[in-house]
Image 1 (cartoon, helix red, strand yellow):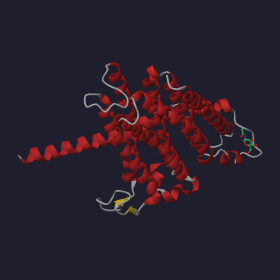
Image 2 (spheres, rainbow, N blue to C red; image 1 turned 45 degrees about the horizontal axis):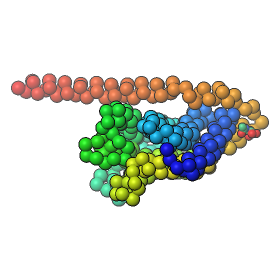
Image 3 (spheres, protein in one colour; image 1 turned 90 degrees about the vertical axis):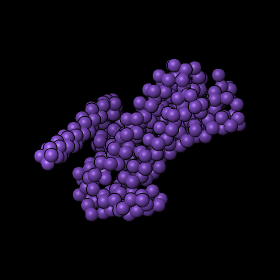
Image 4 (cartoon, rainbow, N blue to C red; image 1 turned 120 degrees about the vertical axis):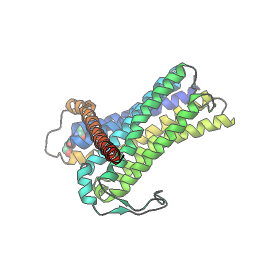
Length: 324
Ligand SMILES: *[C@@H]1O[C@H](CO)[C@@H](O)[C@H](O)[C@H]1NC(C)=O
């Protein structure tokens, strides 16, 4: 087990982070005046207790760390999904975006890494591409977590060991590519819809969600590289550092969430009104019917796509066969 001082520090940070975040969530639930936005918001804030509790448990129960890390990994995909849904609901869904963006383009630029493309028209297809760019990560991440889990129990996976015959190296490579693509898609979406997003003060939210999810990842990778280079003695020690650091960062993140996702906006809309029932709001947050609808919608979109695709192929074959 990790050193006593590390555990104590992580414990205090975890208690603090959970206290701040749960209080924050409670305030959202009592003035649940915009269920559509607040549902996603509360799910995102829940990241703080989930991350800090799980990394604390991984610190004190290192033998079961893979389980707690898997929960963090799956919650990460869940946060990104909810953040994407929040952004799309701010701009009023793809249809709304398309009408207000018609005619605009993203010029090729170096810092957006679109320098090799012609100007990209901002239309329904662009928004769909952005959405797909993020969704591939949301789907791939739980699959990677699952493969890590299976490999681990077959002794083919050790967190932080970049051994060619082990699974960690490959899972890390795939993960890095997938999340870089998701990050890029989110940035392009933000740049395209910047004007529509201004009233929602989206920038701090973007920065916060992305830094929590993606910086914790890079930090883990850097720490494990140090342990590979010999600066840190063992992968276990590296994992302990990572867990303690996440504990501390979650305390900071809990306060950053207060600032980035303020409940005041919603409470002020409710002055003189009655508070909402916190349990009912919680039920609305935890109810996954919106995800089911969204998935069915996506599947429907893809079936339409494949129908039109196979129709095109069939017509092409018909034309070809009539030529022969
Ligand atoms: C909900 O909003 C009202 C009106 O602004 C406020 O008085 C009350 O304190 C808020 N409730 C919570 C739990 O923050």
